[in-house]
Length: 249
Figure (cartoon, rainbow, N blue to C red):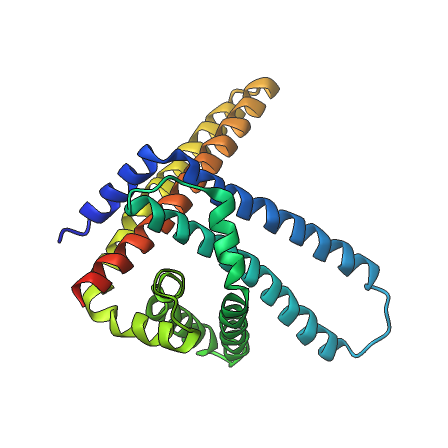
């Protein structure tokens, strides 16, 4: 199958089911609230007397886990919604979130595993000279190998270990579509950044405050809309890719 066709089909699913855009909107709102809470807690504890190294490890670990769990929960709800749509059912936001919440133990375990891996990679990056390269390689490898793990949990009800194994087993059949599909989805985001930056620079060069503000707002709005659509299409694409791979297995 062409690497472009699944992406085109994903855009078609979004065009017919625009309510799917609500999932990344809700996810982004939750992340902003958590980030604000973490920032406030940082200010409150800034003068606390404690072991800096121990506090940093715990703080970073809990922060990663909380953010990871919220992202995982929202992604799981969206996967449920896309799975319903592909089976001919309507998007039911509340029902899909309830379905995801019912699997909170499994999602929490997955978030804990992902957080542990990310923290280990972060420690690996501290190795002089080669640490950054090794960290990037391990991070990319983990992301690719576990790309289909969450759909396996939500669609087929598998546990964390079995979902990870199934995702890794499917890698040979899905690798090219996964990589090139992700690149096709990212392309509009890159173009929006270039266009938005060019519009802002042209407006700024006009020496008009009004045009500069308008250019900045246009760039921000373009980037926001592109990220919203791109994130939604990415979730649709991942779910479709898993369903196709599972059907072919």
